[in-house]
Length: 132
Image (cartoon, rainbow, N blue to C red):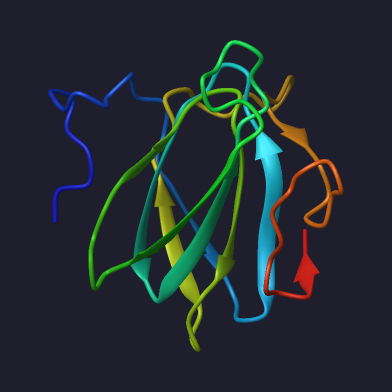
């Protein structure tokens, strides 16, 4: 499976590539980036990806979206800057996600803005009972 090419229409630039994992019963949410665009691919197990759009200028302002990602139907999801996102493990085994962000992580000034996984500001509910 090709994950992302620099001639793909969704490609916005290369910052880095990293892998993150999530265990059953856990969620990793919520955060957004003001500059960075993320590109998620689940390469082991499956995840339930949640998206919430708070952007004032967006046609989808205030809307949530749910996607299930896994190797049964491999897909890359582009997450625009300004959209809150998170995911939970949706399989009985550890899930593994590759992210290809458009910018490298800036340790001195991270482009990362967080809310708790159970934030009342976001109308999306996780099945997982633990989050971070």
